Image (cartoon, rainbow, N blue to C red; front, side, top):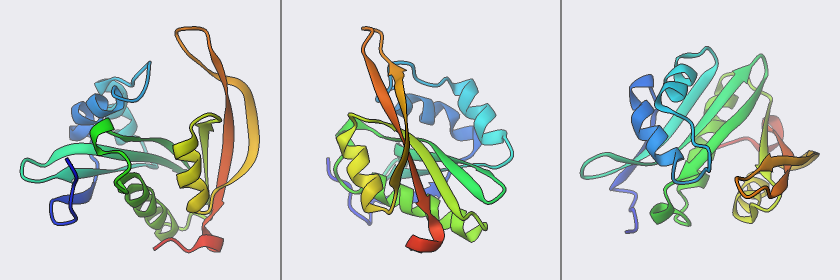
Length: 162
């Protein structure tokens, strides 16, 4: 199923979206966040989420969560349901989040991403993020496999989000 611009829209997330966010999050992570964790995050100061919905039933197919502190922010998580990946939704969500953060006087955004997540790395680099650090064996899996986390940073004044 390929979403079209006339069938999808990006809206700000609220604590009432926690169940849908948790469902989508569970499609991408071995240890997904719970409904309660999403409710608590979206109720916390400085946290903002954006999600994309699909017509006709407004089903949630992806989202991004950010947390702001002073003039810096971090992308906490970005998830697109598997059947909606590679359609530009992640790019649109991150661009919306960066614009919102820039509009709220944030100068820089940081995030952590698995060093082997090539699709995410390609997206973030295309949006102006650059590697500024590495956490050795940061991510672990139930199989015992360890993966480094790359720390990426985007200076919003340099990229001027649209």
